[in-house]
Length: 152
Image (cartoon, rainbow, N blue to C red; front, top):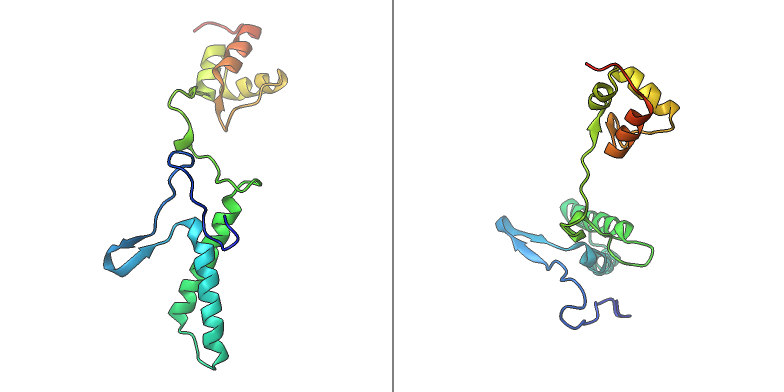
């Protein structure tokens, strides 16, 4: 960002395209997050001059300014410590490994025991679930290799 608060020009292809402001049907406007803060500051300065003359601000106008302030704060909070926008799943290559998790029921069936006992065995082996009632396949295989349960 330049000292004047506008974005410097980048050669095409050097940075991803940012969303642009757009008119929305029924008289609305979309303002991208990176533009909310400068627009909010300009409106605040104008409203301060307006109030200095003794004029009042309509509640719906104040609500719009408040919404811009919140959008600017949300956008800034989402920025990394280095001022870059955070990565999203859209940024990840399709070739990123997508490993399926196995349920606690699958773990228990593989071991031939109850789900509750499977969770206890995993905890005793130092294996934690990836998420609630979901396990990494490698952890299931390791636990199955350590435990030989009855076959069904």
